[in-house]
Image 1 (cartoon, rainbow, N blue to C red):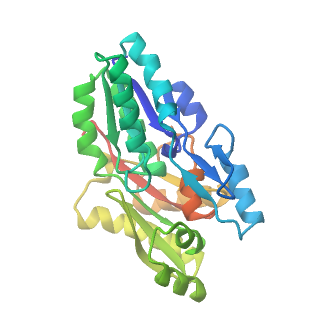
Image 2: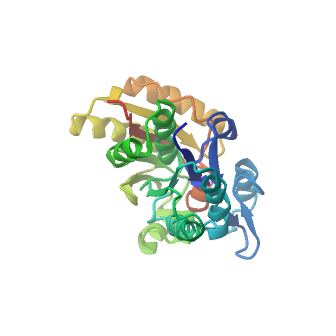
Length: 295
């Protein structure tokens, strides 16, 4: 192994995947009341988090970036051993995690000037970020060195997208991710939004009157993306991300695979986690995709 892979917790890969592939995860934190914060995946579980949102719909959860010291503690272990580190973070447009990691790197280099720590803004979030992490794992396991890997990362991260639908505009409105006037109007009409996350930013890709039609629109948008850009789907890995309803996700995955002629990645063992869930609420579900590094 030529480098250690570090990621913040917003990549939303499962613990089995993390342990199997020797990834260091630095947690972001969430709060129900803006006062007491719980570390993602350490002090709070995603299923418990979403159940609390369902049982208490008036809660306005918040998230916060990792502490600089959290990154320092991880980086120092590998600096002492002379092991290079590639650290990837959630899009800097969504969180200050990237800045925290950069500041931690600066601190480490004061004590370990020969350490190599590369901090990369993934431009991604949740399961599209997870697919990106999965590609880095494959590159590392293929014995690529840091420079080779970084070059490939720059190529593939800009191909990452996620199209998804949510239960309502409410959590996006609370989190300030989209214009509040449009969001309030959307909720009053009871429409189901389709959200696009691309190039580190978030936008509305359409609205539908029912959950069923919204899910069909997610599949349609994915299909249109590949057809309009004349991209071969076989060059990409896909993943169906969801928050809480595993049965709905299983059915949607089967429908998406049949309609798109794809097979979703089974490796990551993750769901949309609490950090993204702060802004989506418990009913987010969608399709993420990232180009494979070896094409």
